[in-house]
Length: 257
Length: 340
Picture 1 (spheres, chains in turn purple, red):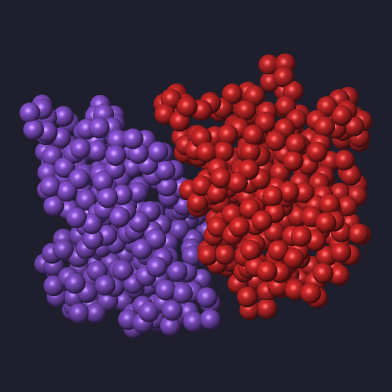
Picture 2 (spheres, chains in turn purple, blue):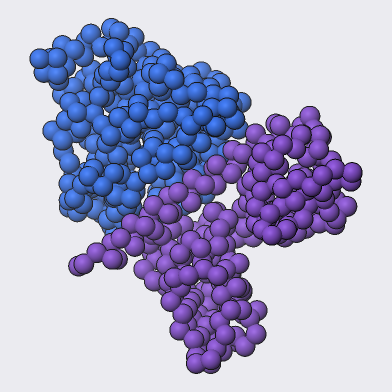
C-alpha cells in the first residue's frame, strides 16, 4: 500500500478498501497509479463523504487529462461500500474551478468545456489504454527474451503456461522445465489491461497477441517488439517531465518562504 | 566550436530564442502563465547551479545571449525560432522583427526564421511576401498550437497552410521548423499532434520539415513518420535536457531515434534560454550510450555521430559549408576575441 497520503478517517474506519480503489486510478498518459505518482495530496472521509485533494505536477497540466483523473477518482470511490458522495479538488490548477464543478456534479467533459474543441474523453482514454497495452506488453516481452525464450517459444505460449509464484512469473510448457521469467507484477499489469480492452484472457489463449487479439508469428515478433519498445519509451517522456516538475513543486513547498 | 581530442565540432544551435517576457510585455494573464511554464521546465530539468532568477529568465538581453551561446556555449551559429504569441504578448514573444535586431548585429552567426499563420488566409499573403522581402529570412518556424481569434490551433495540411507552404517554396524557403512538443499551458495538447507533418512532408518533397522537440511525448508517432519520410528531421531540443536528470532515459530516446532515423537526421537544439548550450553540450559530449542499449538497438553514439548531430546535419539542410563558415566566423567580433 502506498505511503505518504495524509488520510483523515473517522475513528475506527478501515481505509484499506478506499485506498485500494484509489490506487487503481491511473494517470492515463503515464499509465501509472496516481497514488504512486504522488498526485493525491490528502484524503478525508466523513459520514459517507470522501474528499480527495489532488496535487498535479503543475497548475497547467493538460485540462483534458486532469479532468479524466478527477472523474476516475470520483467513479472509483463511489464504488466503495459506505461512500455516498465524493468531492474532488484540484488545488491551484488553472482550470480547478471548472473541473471541480463539473466532475463533482457528474457532468461530462464535452459539456463542461464546450467551445474549447475538447471532444470526447472516451476516445482519448481508449488511445492511452491501447498505448498502455503496448507499454505493458513490451515489459513482459523484454522479460521473456531476457529469460532466454526463443521467438518461436514466445509465440507458442498460452496464457495458462504463465503463472505467478512468489512474486515471479514462471513459464511451464508441456514436457519442459519451469523457467522463471521476471517479476509477477509485469504479467499482472499486462493481463489487467488485456482484460480491460476486452481481449480473450482464457488459459488457452495465446500469451502474446496484438491489439486485435491476433497471435504473432515468430517472423513478425522482432518487428513488433521494435515498435512496442518505442511506444513504451515515448510514454515515459511525460512521466519524466511530470516527475521532474512534481519534485520541483515539492521542493518549493518545503522551502521556507 | 567544441574541441575534443584534437577534433573540432562545428555547432549549430537549431532552436534558440531571444525573447521578451517582461511583465510590461504581458498582454493577458497568459503572458505570465506562458513564461512561468517555461521557467518550470528550466528549473526542474537544469542542473541546480544553472538555474536563473525568474527576472533574468523573463528578459536576459543581447549580451547575455551572446555570451551563453558563442563565448561560453561552444555554439557557432544559432537558429532564431521566432515565436509570436500576440494574444499573450503585446509586442510578441520573439517575433522575426525582434529577432532581427540581433541578427543584424551578427549576420553570420544567426539564421532567422519567419513564419505564417494560415488562418490569415488571403489577407496574410501580402504580409508574408513583405516579411520575405524586408527581412533576411532563412527558414520558417511554424507553431500549430498558437491561439488566434478564438481558434486553438491549426494543422499543416489545412488548405491555406498548403498555399503558404507553396508560396514559401517559390520564394526560396527550404527548411520548415515545426513545433511539436510537450504541452505548454495554455495551449491545447491536441494541437501538437504530429500526424499533419506526414501529409505536408509527402506533398512538399522539396521542403525539409524539422520537427522540434521530436514530438515529445509523441515520440512513437514521430518515429513512424520520420522513418517513412526522407524529408522529416528530428530537432532535439527538450530531449537534450534529459541528458542531465535522466541520462538513461536520454540514451533510450537517442537509441530509438538512431534506430528509426539514422545519424543523418538528428539536429541539436538547446531551446535557449530554457536550457543553456554550455552544459547541454558538455554533458552530451561526455555521454556514452550504455552498452546494453548499443547491443539491443545496434546503434552507437560515436564522435562522428555527435559531430553530425551538433552541427553537420543542420549545416547540410541550410547549405552551409562548415569549413568556409568557420573561417568567416573566426574573423567576426566574437570569433576574433575567442581566438585571441
